[in-house]
Amino acid sequence: MTKEVGHTGATAPRRTPVSRLTSDLLPLLAGVACAAAGTGAVLALTGSNSPLRAPFVLLFLFLAPAAGLYAALHRLEPWVRTSAAASGSLVVNLAFAAALSWLEVPVVGIGVTAIVAATALMFLWATWERRRGHVSTPRSNS
Image 1 (cartoon, rainbow, N blue to C red):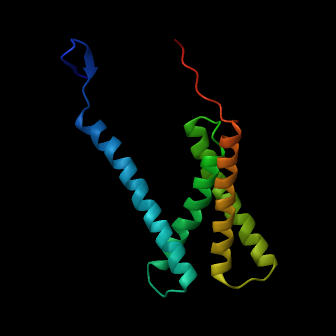
Image 2: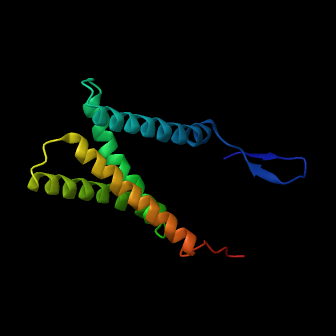
Image 3: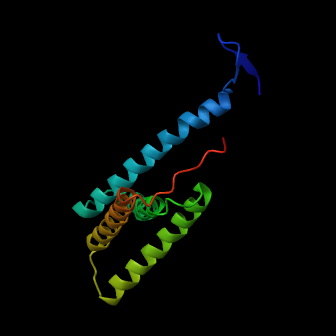
């Protein structure tokens, strides 16, 4: 990595084009995924016959519980949170699918509404934990 000298004489790492691309691209991709997932929820709840309904609903059904679990697991390391949220999202979806199948609920909108409610509860719980002061702050080694 090359260094560049600032006006104070201190050297600062110069951002390479690849690092600049990844740092700018990840938030953009996350926003696009959230927009597509939200579109999937809207398409499912309105009963649209769009050909994009199935992929967007599947994206929503995976991303919504994963985001809620990621927020709720704030005490873990980022990579552990990511893998736990992804696998937990599958568990949440399977649990809701089994419950709705057992109850013989044939309407897709009810399943999407249940996932929305579960995700909202996860976000509320994470917010409540942070308000109570149970968030561990990272300690600096200085």
